[in-house]
Image (cartoon, rainbow, N blue to C red; front, side, top):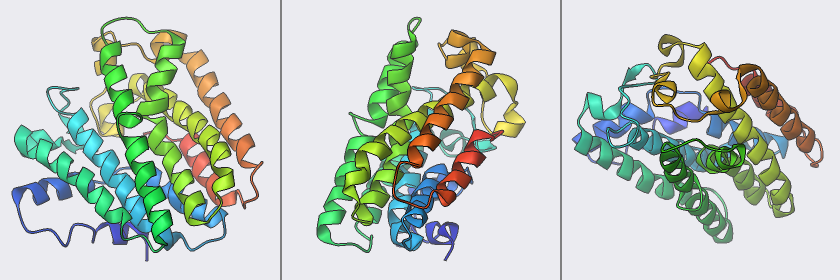
Length: 278
């Protein structure tokens, strides 16, 4: 079964409601599915059946989608376009969008309970999902990002924001695969790989926001520039930002080769991310 086929079934158990419609609208709107791709490729790198991680990969996509729904709200970034469609609060309303995000967060933890693994591993996966998506992870990055809009940021401050806001959810696919494959000794290396991958991914986002278009990216762009927000491009300039993104990807790739895995499945995903245009 392909992962997208699995994902399409994940909300089937919910009663019909406007909230379910809003959840489906955002979760099934497309997107790159980067986090599930990384999780699946990590399982393949370990030589295991990737379907074993499908529920956790779905949980990651739900967490990511809920964060986008809330990020787009008027109280946050006030964006009107996401994945080429009106944002959730525009297509429905603000209250429904908030509830849809809340419900996707809850459903993510339900998905983890469906993983085919022992109870010890399920507890470890739930703990990872809580830590990396919560107030010491993605949510921390979000509040630091909001606070950072009040003034200029240093390179160290910007790095801390994006290690959490972007990097945490790009690290957790590797950690989950290591847990499911009983390779917990690899976790420190995966942490370093995820950190570098997340920073490079974010720098690319900053670059694309000034070099691409809303039609290509499927979202509002240039709002950072209009709001005088510090990004890697405003801090370093376009040329240096591109060089730094490439350097982080190279470091992540080099670290990948230090693990006792088949790196090819992950290298394919890394290569696609390094050359993405949206």
